[in-house]
Amino acid sequence: MKRFSSLLATAFLAALFLSSCSQGWQQYALPTLPQKEGLQIDIEPLDNKYDRHGPIEVQFTVTNVGDTPVRINRAQTPLEGKFTTDYFSISHKKHDVYYTGTRRPRNPYLPGLKQRIQLKPGESISGVVDISQGYEFQKGGKYTLAFHGSTVNRLPDSPEVEIKLK
Image (cartoon, rainbow, N blue to C red; front, top):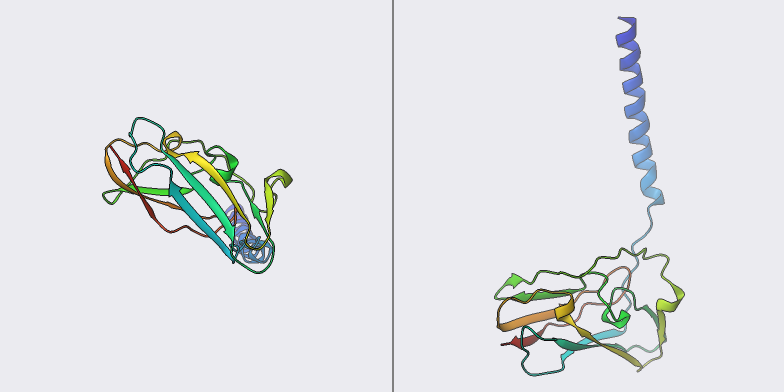
């Protein structure tokens, strides 16, 4: 009986400790980085119609449309020159296209200095990416494509564009 009450007391103290830790831990959680305001994202297909078995290149452009210089992070964007995460939303007839690229997690609070870029008001930076290197296109037809910003790159989402595959 003494052993049972000792186990019960230990369980009670453990539950009390864990609940106080979980409540106190929330005050130390890192804040979510806001997306940058004054930035515009544009995606432009480089061709009118693509072969689904060949390269499908699109130009990705970030423009500072604000009044002040803005620092952005090229990580997890087409500006990196390779796929490190699923940063596009691509669909065909309301079905999502499967991402086949690599996933390289990044800490949004410690981006590399080489990844940071400063854009002055009116300044743009562009990069071309072959989306067939990161996504699986199985059929021809019309696809919609949009970029989705994240806490790592702190970019806003882009408007949807349409690409055609044969």
